[in-house]
Length: 394
Image 1: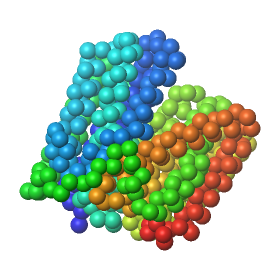
Image 2: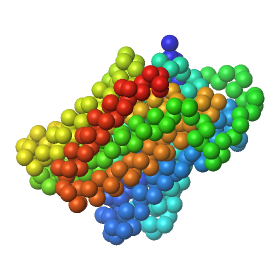
Image 3: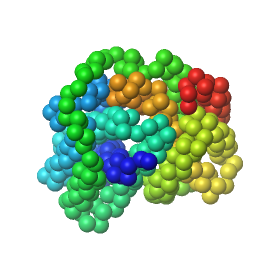
Image 4: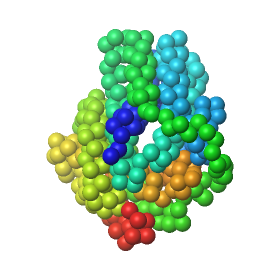
C-alpha cells in the first residue's frame, strides 16, 4: 500500500510548484497592468515558461540518487520549497509598480526552482511507487499543481485586493512553507545519502533516457497537442459570445480550476482501473465531442457554451494524469529524471506550437475549422493509442 506520507508530500509539493507558476503568468500580469505597465512588458511574464521547456538541460543531474549540494532527492524536496518561499519574500521589497526587470528576474528564478522541483518529484515517484501506485501519485501531482494554480492565479489576487500587496505576499510565503512540511515527515532510508553506483549522465542526450517505443509516445503527443490546439482560444470565443472578461476569469480561473482538482482524482481512479492507454483514449473521445460542439459556437446558447467551455478546460487535468502515467512507463528507471523531463519539455513545446498554430488557423478560417480539426486530431490520437497500447504496455 502506498505510504500516506509519501502521497501527501507529492500533493503538497506540487502546490509549491503550481502556485508561483500561475501567479507569475496570471496574477502578476494583471497587477502589473493595473500599475501602468505596457502590454509588451506584461507579455514578457510568459518568459517563466522557458525553464519548464528547458529543464531537460539540468535534469540529468537528478538521475543520480545523490546530487550535490543537498544530497538525496528527499533533501532537495525539503530545500526547494524554502528557496521558493524566499524568492516570494523578496517581493515584500517590491510592488507591482517596481521596475519590470526585477519582477521578471524574480519570476524566472521562481520558475527554475519550480521546474527543478517537478524533475525531482518525478524521480521520487518513479523510485518510491510501483506502476499501479503511480496512477494515484500522478493524480495527486496534477491535483496539487491545479490547487496551486487556483491559489496563485485567483485566490491570491483577491487576497491582495482585500488585504493589500504585502499581506498577500506574507500569506503566500507562509503557505509555501506549510506546503513543504509533509516532505519533512517522510522517512529517509539509511542508504539514501550514499553515493552508490554512479549513473551515466545523459547531458544533451535526453532522448536516450526513454524506451525504444518512445517514438509512438511522441506521435501520440503530437496528436494530443493538436487535440488541445483550441484550448488557448476558449476564453476568446466566450468573449465573442458576450461574456465579460471578469465572467471568463471567474469561470475559467476559478470554477474550471476548482473542478480540475476532483477531476484529477477521478482520472487517477480511471487509470488505475483501465490503464493509462484506455483511459486516455476514452478521455480523448470525450474531448473530440466537446471540440465538435465548440465548432458550432456561433449557434450555441451562451449558457450551454459556458458549460462546454468549462468542461473542456477542466478535462485537461484528466488527460494530464493519463499522459504522465504513459511518460513514466516509458522512461529508463536509471534515468528517470531525464526521461520525464524530456517528455514534459517536449510536451510544453508541442502545446506552445499547437496554441500558436491554432490561433493562426482561427484567424485565417475561423474557429469552426479550428475546433473541427482539433476534434479530428483527438479522434486520431485515441485511435493511435488503442492500436499501440500493447507496444507501449499502457
